[in-house]
Image (tube, rainbow, N blue to C red; front, side, top):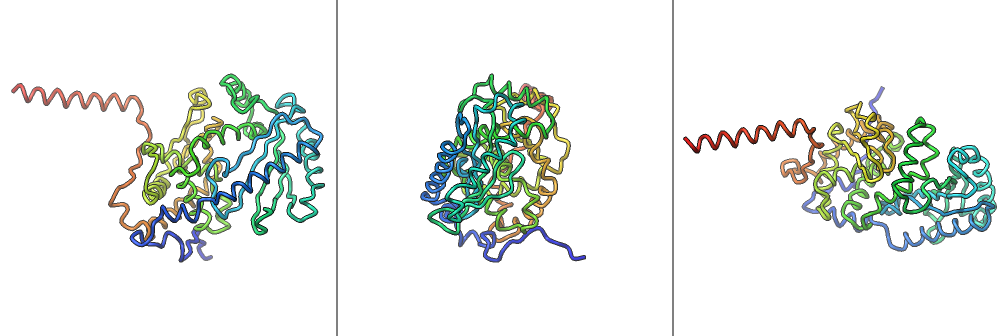
Length: 374
């Protein structure tokens, strides 16, 4: 049986451009950064849907949350966008009530979406619902060949607003801790609010956002289609890039070639990645979730402390490493290893090791002092 490769690097790929003749920074800005009018069009489409739902669907909407790569400042020009609209409803009295009524509410939303003029005009195509959302594809009005994939999630507003207090977050995590992974899935629409806010704190044109765009473009263009289904989703990739960037000091600007090289090198060392953020919770309360597989990174969702996000994509990490190794041999990155331009810091050392190092330094200092006295 013939060996199937996971990579699909085209001849005209940016990886095959020698850096002396190719500016990767310009390439990202000119080819991958979304056009301003595209963002405006997306916002208008989402606003129209929200307005329609509020007027036509007989539900008591408390507030609406929009999320997606565009709203996190990490979307890529020309790629199909996926947006999530979370309808926080007064109709749900609790998360338990939400689980009980959710299927009925989803059917109501689907029924009314099928009655829109967008269906008649051929601009909206309903897709099969997920367990927690109504899903459809919407064609852009100004670009007939461009589509948005949109998911509508009805949910209980357990966080009580756009800026939840620590008390509400701690209460939610306490409830989630009593559930298994399947039971926690109903909380995803709520968690997505914290995910968006975590990544959204930088302006869209920030260098690290552009590095995220480049990595997504690399995945989109350099992997075989049948391989992509195994790869980590966009949010996990965004977190991985952020972790690498933070480990080198979170520079506000950097050469894109250096950043991309650093990312690929980091992929080759999954056991070195321990990405934990404590903005929304104290991870030490959930320390039973520790690294078990050194073949994959250890990435904890900054919006939810339960389980390693990378563990869902074990085959995908192997494929990422394979294509990263091949990419590092391409003309764009020739000679980069010798320059050691972006050194990735190892995970924080255990306190015991730090004490040992401190003791060694003190011993060296004492030895020098004794030599001076002699």
